[in-house]
Length: 545
Figure 1 (cartoon, one colour):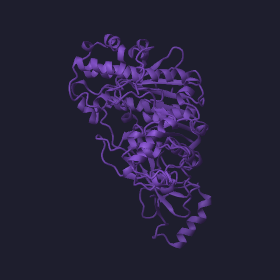
Figure 2 (cartoon, one colour; figure 1 turned 135 degrees about the vertical axis):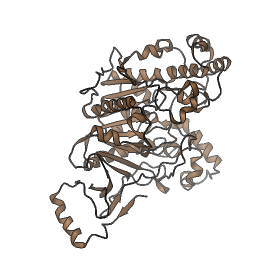
Figure 3 (spheres, helix red, strand yellow; figure 1 turned 120 degrees about the vertical axis):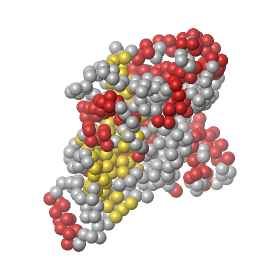
Figure 4 (cartoon, one colour; figure 1 turned 60 degrees about the vertical axis):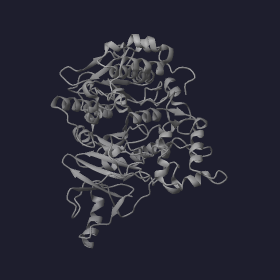
């Protein structure tokens, strides 16, 4: 729950009244050191006062509620606006609880709660109302199963580039994507949370010095998929003015075995009719009496018990008020909000998935490599093996990861670039630093993790803690943040002192982002990822579910 305080008990009534009388004469959001709260900063919004932490070069407000807690009768209800808190001061000095989520083996256990709709605001310098600084709203990834906004510490991006950065939590898994006949907004609660956060930014970010008329919506991985959804949703229109999609998977499908060894995944979007049988099985497993109020009974089931079913609730549902049309069809038809887009991927996307599914722990021989190709691509396995011969790679793991990167990630990435560029300006990139800090991915062994999925995030944010970047990598990180912030400010990433970044057009230029002199330069993305070969190949074999 949010923490509040009244005015300091060390402040006399005369001091309090004097401050109240002077307040109309001062900027409402002028930073103020509160008695007994060295290092704190208080701003005033239409909801009430909010106390954050003033650091050298930036201020941060964490754990700010942007909606009512989605608990009890508000479980599986569209988010409701948070109510003003009157004369109290909201203490926003620590992150709020993260959303209920899968506990992944590579993440620390974390406190979670359904009361999770909190955001964090990073402000350059000292907050000042009316400063009109560009705003970046970041949507985290995590396969709709894990992650939180508070993991992404945005002090470098905010302080160095003079932008306001907002990170947020949203409902995931069964809490964000549950669907059942007659349940309004089923399958889209997590997306509606993000809409509510954007509305909060529109209404309140001016008090932090941000410009509500210049908001960039940015997401990575699943967050990138969410940004793609907002680009085609009527509910998001006008709430953001630029978009950044990093390794988004909105257009992706996954042949068998290409995503953590799972069966074929035809789409990450579904209809209510397609998803209802999943909910029916959960109801049966929980032994809910189907002759009574099913949703009412489910709202009384403990959080932890429901969360055990979250892995069944990854896809979002279309045919809803948030997504009236299939988002892939809408994107390919050019039915998007015409805002400038910066989008891209990493050079070795699939090495992360191969690593986490154990592929680099036990060496893959040629027979296993060919078996994986056959499982994924059926009768086309032989052609693909000829294009990606086992002996051409240092290991079977790298051969398999390269196939999956090109087919599952690069192909739909390019398809989305082309579709968006037909409607709006697009700048395309590929993050290519194969020496990026790997952290837990060190299990990649001699093959290395390469420029793996999510590798760029440590260059843009401190993800829970600063990444051990070398000096040259810090220069690349600074350059990337300058591109992103310039794009947020002007709708074009090009700026003084930066290598020229040509917009994506019929020539299809993609800017490579790599460590080293001259390594930020155009690359032939289509040739590198053999997209001509994949055209008309590699579809999920007919009949696979």
